Image (spheres, rainbow, N blue to C red):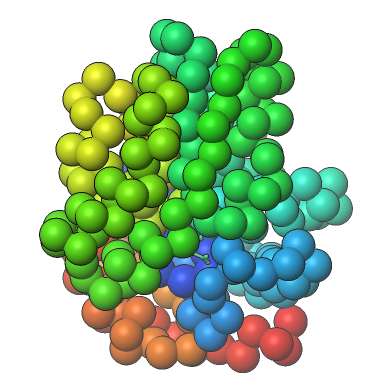
Length: 272
Ligand code: DGL
């Protein structure tokens, strides 16, 4: 395996940029190829079969880009497609669920953990399964918050409408006395301020994007696959691909990533 090859990162759309951003921050030497499935987003309301088929197509595309490892930067795809894919490819692949579950298991003091995510992730119960493996006896309370994704994509990050929806979604979790809340959807870390304000300062918010980048770094280090050379002047270490609306993707990316991207290339993912 070539340690100078890029890391492949994918999501149903722009949300996975919160994971890409952490990878760029924590591993500044790494090259990244990002794919956002903007033609077929959202995954959170689709069936297991569909999300798994889409994920396989993207994995094949990324393998064609000769990536050395793949990060599934989408909670829904990590929850329902990763278990099948990981057993069948020959490059390392990780998702965002396990690292998030691990961080929450060690952060909770009273053993009561909330998970907010898409419908598909909540119904998969995967966060509960991982947490119970690491912390048997933990009490895990899940809540699907489907409106958060369009609110973020509409730019309503700090807005009275978002405050109100957060109050409605989160009130039942607050009543249960959870002390840790997993932001189990790629878009939710962008709502961190609103979520923290609504839950109160005593509740620890776990960001699977941050935890995944940390885990990815460790995994590459263990396999001797960390890139030890800085990108050279004129190098373009980051490449972005989408299945639709490349300009819209670029505009949103430029509000999430710490630097401006020049553009994204549209490809036909159905060819894979
Ligand atoms: N990226 C998805 C996730 O993290 C959210 C958007 C979608 O439903 O596709 O679950």
